[in-house]
Length: 121
Image (cartoon, rainbow, N blue to C red; front, top):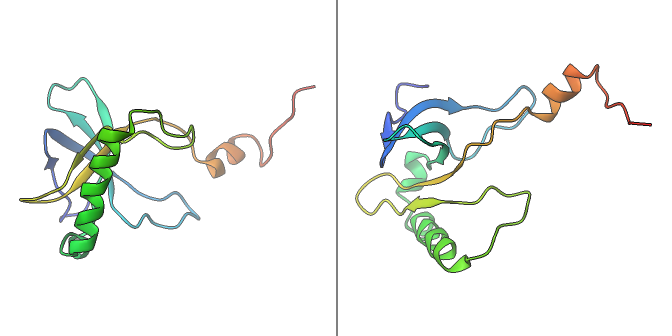
């Protein structure tokens, strides 16, 4: 984690910053692995940079994400992690929470398999 990274967002204690794997482009918004206050949930928190926090249109999109989450009711497409909590950041840093799903990146999987996948017969 860098010196300016938050140690806590809402009820979540920040554990680590997620960074891009080798060859991947960096995320536009910083992402962090965090634990709930009770320690029973591990989540990914996405929080915009300070430059974006000051952008009124960007903050409005965060409020729109919360409304979509509340009104959606259905499940997101399988390739998207569901947003389970959003803070519009009216008095501070806005952030959104998705479940933490541990997995390997495609480059790591390819490296572990000798650079290619083997098809089952």
